[in-house]
Length: 284
Picture 1 (cartoon, rainbow, N blue to C red):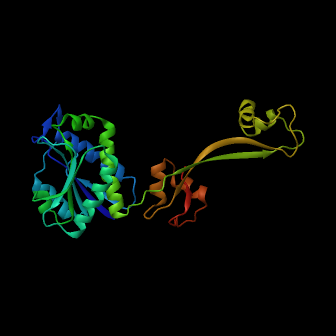
Picture 2: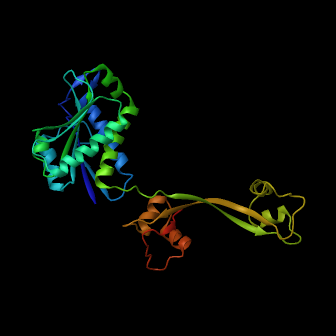
């Protein structure tokens, strides 16, 4: 399990940098929240945030939470100020080899995506970098007091791009794999026509309507049914899930809005309800 701690800079009574109608504390929370959302699409990842609302945890409280949780990385999100322009990131002045590696990967992935000047990879004696027990990277995502950078930061698409750049870096750094998406499959029930059948008699047998049978079988001539011909009499969409480590029948039934008994019957499971990783399971 990869444990990622995301620190949204500033918050509460500390707005951080301010400029061009923007506050750093609001931008960092938006970026951090989007990073968390994107990371949740990956397997074996646990995520904690320094804050999820407009509050101010002290710097020592942030690193204390990450240290006690034994995070694998502390990612601190900030917006710059001071008359410059562009993106840069920081690690501690005497950072570990692993921290340098993570910084290089995250930096490269962000620069691929964002249309900003590359100000390079840097180091500093910032408290969250110095007091984190794990590798820590602090990103400065543009200058809030630069009109061009601020114009980008005001758009949702740029916030999402910044988040994706961070996530792409984390995915590469920790070799994260995406969760397998559920698969929807069309299922149907068919009937073989015998002598004497009519659409009306078939509709009555399957508790449907002639109109429905005609819509399900557009190539069938209702006035000239052929003996031995297959007729679709009902159709629905089934959802299949590829079993991952930790999945249980009860959890999957709850997730997809079905019942344990339905999942058991659809998949002909025995009374042990045992699942195998990689097994394709009908869940709805």
